Length: 313
Ligand code: NDP
Ligand code: OXD
Image 1 (cartoon, rainbow, N blue to C red):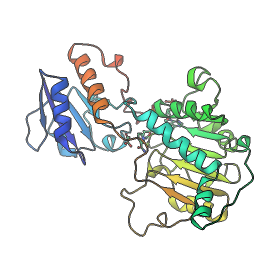
Image 2: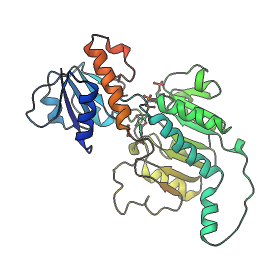
Image 3: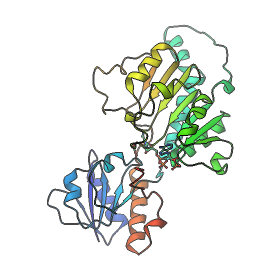
Image 4: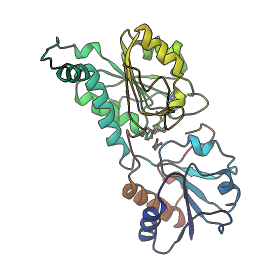
């Protein structure tokens, strides 16, 4: 079995070593143009040449949860695409979103600014019930975030494409589904967490029309993809005061270009696409286990994280 590795922006050697150790019978190598055809690809944002020169692939394993960069390429019809399924990301995402929600709700940013200015000042505690959190995307990451926020007694609303039963982490989440229920979801929420995949349906979904429907003093946490947000609309709503602020981890262009108005905006908290990092050891173990299962003849449908290429996630 031959495995080829082609991950833009990723140091390959530790991954190659990890995959070789986990799949001792496999021939694992770094892809370069003209490399021999492989059975499985382990990829992140590969070039189109990679796809064009690998006609024998049985499956592509994406070393991230989002497959938007991969699905922008021309893929052979029927090629199986498998994304990371949690692999240690959901707990990181829960940490990140909870800290952003709590920092905003408890006004820790203001307390830090006061202390930096030498002022020992108290603010009136805010009511938790005034900060219902709406999570867009109730998949692997969104469900875990919902569970974590509920542990802090926040009211949680959730929105997804298909209706969700009230079980497990969503047992106490008020769920909404589909475009027709989006307005009701937005108007029930003051803090908005975006955990949608980037697809043709979700691109630009955080725009003037949708964000205006959040409760006054709304707060946006975007941890999915920058292209979900219409930057100018977000800025306009921050400046009008309808939105109190936003925490942004992802941007339309990454790194965020110098001079972009987000850099200096006083109502924004920015991080460099770091809310849930790909963890190498967990990811290698998950991918190796799945390659082993496919090689042993198990059906693709038995694996978690198989992408529906027609839906885009
Ligand atoms: P999942 O595929 O598990 O979940 C996606 C969710 O979005 C599902 O609930 C799905 O609905 C919902 N959804 C998809 N399309 C629509 C739509 N048109 N309308 C309403 N709901 C929709 O993905 P993950 O939770 O694993 O990851 C989510 C995203 O997080 C990734 O695609 C990636 O972009 C981003 N991410 C960001 C990271 C970072 O560091 N910033 C790290 C990892 C991921 P349904 O349940 O009905 O299918
Ligand atoms: C991912 C990401 O999709 O890192 O996994 O954004």
